[in-house]
Length: 113
Image (tube, rainbow, N blue to C red; front, side):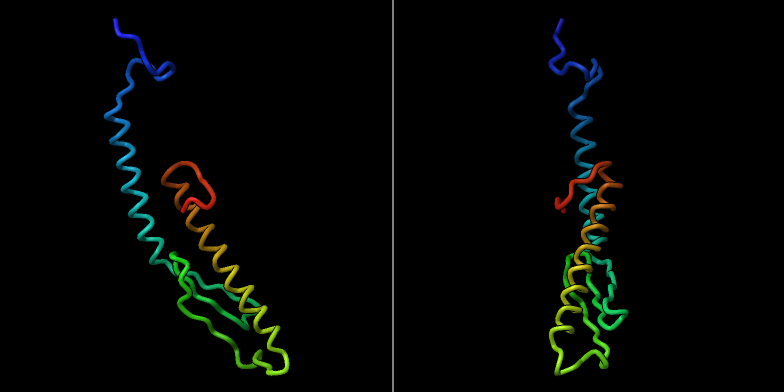
């Protein structure tokens, strides 16, 4: 009688079934990744003074700046608003991707995708 090389998995362990499931999950992840790449997220800072639109690939699609926040005497504030807005947009994309991947895989690994 052959010994079960994978204790705890029971006699019904089927490597082919496991490979099929892994392949299906990989296909689902690839499909989801493509879908997420097409999504766009809008983020604002400074009460809407600066708006950034970013896609799932972390590509900035647009930046809008209200004219009243453009002060030649205070460029640093505008720069800070832009940096804050872009960083928040990137964080939101990361969260979106992580949450959606967790739905497909059943677990989340920060920074994996």
